[in-house]
Image (cartoon, helix red, strand yellow):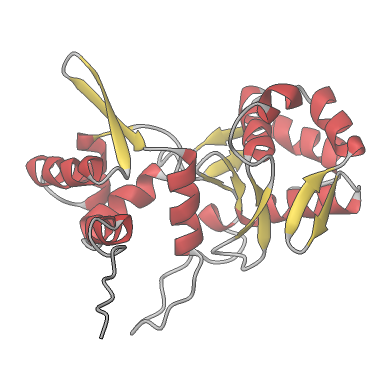
Length: 235
């Protein structure tokens, strides 16, 4: 009888990734880095409630697993997610409901992280859902079998809003995709175009980051701009 060997097990990235994320402290550090910004080891230690030496050890394991990267400038070391693809994977994983002994603690709807936050590099939360709905209602995108595509009207809006669509097309990253929002349980928009959109919203100071870097606040300028441009009433 022939013996069948499972060649896919040895060296599987799944096992190394699962091992790197299995520790609650490392998972908490990754959640903080999903803001899309950099954090120092000391900042992450305070967020996770552990000693700096303990945090350094955990961060080393995450770097070795390819989950995050580190940039050094003298004694300053800044950590960030390894890639948009890795951030996308972990955000999708966080949105899956698993049979747990206790459900994950989620923010109250309409407050804090639940209203507006960065999902790595695009807007999530209730505001992200509203932006998604505007893009659909104004036919800036079409959605077929849960695959969104930018229409000519959508491309015209993006260009007028200051987004270099032609440059985005040269990237390997998808222009658009649907992400299941972990607080709203509905889709928001991810991909290259929504990432560029959030950058513009931050540049124009319609949005600003809170101290934890992931939560976003709509400024007074942003309230007026979102209402005029998207018809979104931020109360």
